[in-house]
Image (cartoon, rainbow, N blue to C red; front, side, top):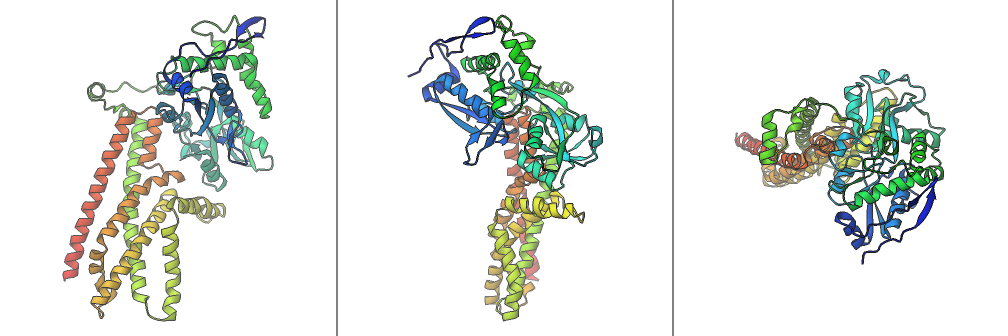
Length: 532
């Protein structure tokens, strides 16, 4: 049964306005929410105190408080779902969440992707966060320097194109901060709201925030595309207006010890005048700042538009030099990493497998020599490759970087880990196959047994190498922008989902066919060599 709230009146300023209530007739997503009895809101968990996890693992913060107020006014239960900067709009458009309240900058591009709501409810600018004694005091100082960035932030492209920083993209704030701590970047570019709070909350940390604040942008709540003008979007917009009029968000700032922002104070002053914030459209004073402008690109050629209109295949992103360049780099990295990982996995498997076959059963000294080999194989096989990348890139690599000895790059780390992970499986397969070959040919040398062992272990070797190509996408966790993460970024910035996801499917299908063809050729060569 759909429940409706009674009308309650309260004094705001010198006029009388009705407290926001559910309409008598609802449609779309709001009708579904009320029937379900639960409002699902996407919030951040890595942006304290706006959204974070408490000691018990519960999501808490200023934005979850807004979500609770929204659910309470609807008269339904609340479910909070953690979202990230790169997936929050996809989650609301897919129906995973009903509303997004997740520190999202209001941009022209995002308004074309989902139902961003007026008025805005907060704002932030961009600052750089780095060691307190660093020499980078302005954005001009950071030109050409490696700067940590969080995937999905609206200003990343502007920082690269206009301010000339060398962006190092990480999937979440935690990874970006770790990379900065271990010397992978000279600074972390992010929202001033979050970074200032980080400095205030950790006064003993040797980090500071650059004073120069750029690209100030309002924050917007979002509903699915097409829902902004339906009853859900209008209801949430009305609630935001009520929160400004009553000073509710200002009170939450005090609760979370953020300090009252001038932006909210101005909106509170405007909405406290009932005669001002009425009508459609609302006056600028009631909306907040305008959306962040979209980069101006030249119009795509006519054939691209005709292809989109006739088939639904949207290739307009390839007309944009910036996005096209990212795609080509991502494609090159994926192919290069796959090739190096396959060759590395085969080399590691062959070396360790032959070592095991050569030393097995030769006494105590051989067992002592084999102990490190078997430990390496066990650890490499049993530890998830993503964890190995974290340990080597952030841990060991960070220590080496801070000691000024060497700074292992993301590509080298990813290639090494993927080679060891698949190579350790190959080593086990080849060692067993070599043992079987030796049982049939006791007097043969280890090297002469390799062709037969390769044929015996062929299917397993192919499976291990194919799987490691599929796992190459894990490298995005250490700021290696391979194809999957690049496509996800482009989709989050407005690229056509169907075109890019289907394109990825075709690319990986063809890549796997290519890998299988190369292995068949390799098998034929091994058979010929073994027959000599």
